[in-house]
Image (cartoon, rainbow, N blue to C red; front, top):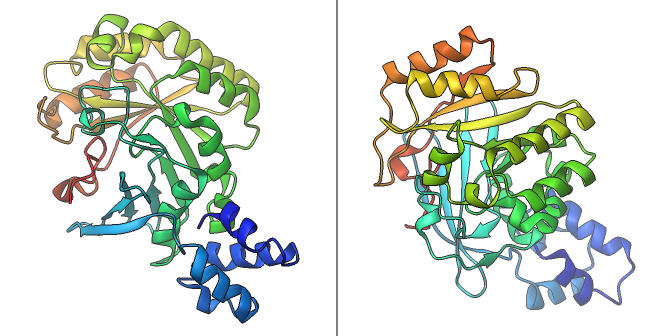
Length: 324
């Protein structure tokens, strides 16, 4: 719901009316008709002039593991995907997109092969989460869908700051970055809420990282890690490192040893991500991942292997490419 447009349309209503409308929407209402404490005349005006969602649902796919992927279009037809992940412990996590497409062309990521359209507004980001909120309660949101969140910093932070209204606290909100330094620096300096920071790393040295992530040519590894260290020193919060496992590319014992050398175990926790096929690489074997993790364990660098969700519907990490 575009609350800016709601405010414009209801300009003659008392200010608390806007709050009433948002309270209904954030609780999971599915139409203006449900907003019983909003006058019928105001509801009729909203129905006529403000779409209930700033995004149009085009298609939904459901995985055998319970994951749901939604394909939306913006008002001008740009594609956006979001994913609801259901876990056995009861968690309901939504992976949202911050851009339609992505301009940074990481080679292992399907989104990077798409045409980049534009940044999403705060309301378009929130409407992804609200779509799933209308299905069932949600308690986690990760900004790990399409796009680089730090390239859309203002809108991403504006959306994140409204997530508590949906039942998602800052400590259960994670914003991921490839290390886009202008946005990362602003995040470190300006965001005081305990929102989690995740770094999309994927290689332990500049040469290899530049091969698979061209952004590294612009913002080298040492600079990015130094900014993450500054975040830890200012906020005393760990940084979560995402490391996708690519067979024969970045998954050797030597790579693990390099990774353990460059990451301070006080500051970082590593999530090893089994590669979800997008056409260019093969994923590392379970044995290779286990050996890699063993090296990190020996170095006492905290690490986990991420549970893959939604691979059968191309909803897993790195697979979002706006296809139905």
